[in-house]
Length: 276
Ligand code: ADP
Image (tube, rainbow, N blue to C red; front, side, top):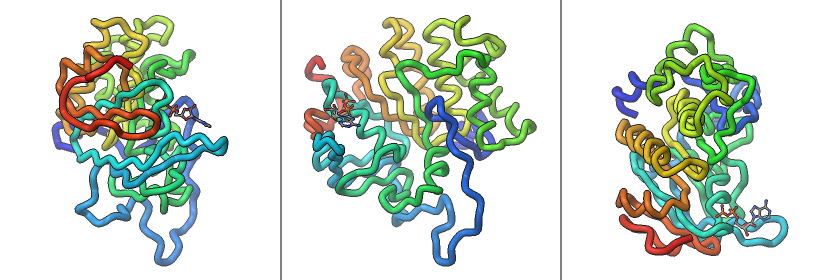
């Protein structure tokens, strides 16, 4: 993360509601002798890509093979579209990255952390390095814009002194300073998604995973959201965006990873090639 971003958005070390559910507080206790320091990367430095999947398969308990032998490397600072028809495995892939699900075979690493070897109590540390943005925003309806963003820090016990400037920077980044006291019901769809992006950015993540972030928005507002994600990427945060929006993908000529039936069928810079 560049200094510019740190100044623009960053904040204190903190936490991450990458969903509405607050992450569990970290387990207290002393590290075991010989155990890696929490947060210490477990892979050699040359493998510290943002995302590194090697030979990854995921078979659910039902026997469904959602991902089959997936290799994927996303270097720090990349902007990647993840496309594919419904059921192709896009959500499964994002769930593996936040350790919501575990791979059945192969290795998954995020920001140098080998998730297969990660202990359960280290998962909250991983999630602080990832911001996640959903199609349906997942804002807390009774909280204001400010409170929704602050909640991401509150759940990790960040002090008010550190929280306020971090929330203000995140709101400024998405252009919502004026709307800070409004509740989600008083916002447009685009403003709701910008609130969700501020919440994802408030803890200064290394990686943003955006799962169909424009799926509920009209085309003009969708472009605003894409522009915001591009700006965040230019400031140094890696972005992985799952989308069905062929127009956006084609226009931007970024890296496109296409999944079909659990396999990567294309990984190249450029257009969308087919409608999903
Ligand atoms: P996408 O996000 O591309 O629509 P998913 O990753 O949601 O695809 O799903 C990939 C496949 O895995 C689908 O066939 C889906 O039905 C199946 N699947 C997803 N989650 C589960 C689960 N928890 N248990 C069993 N099958 C699942």
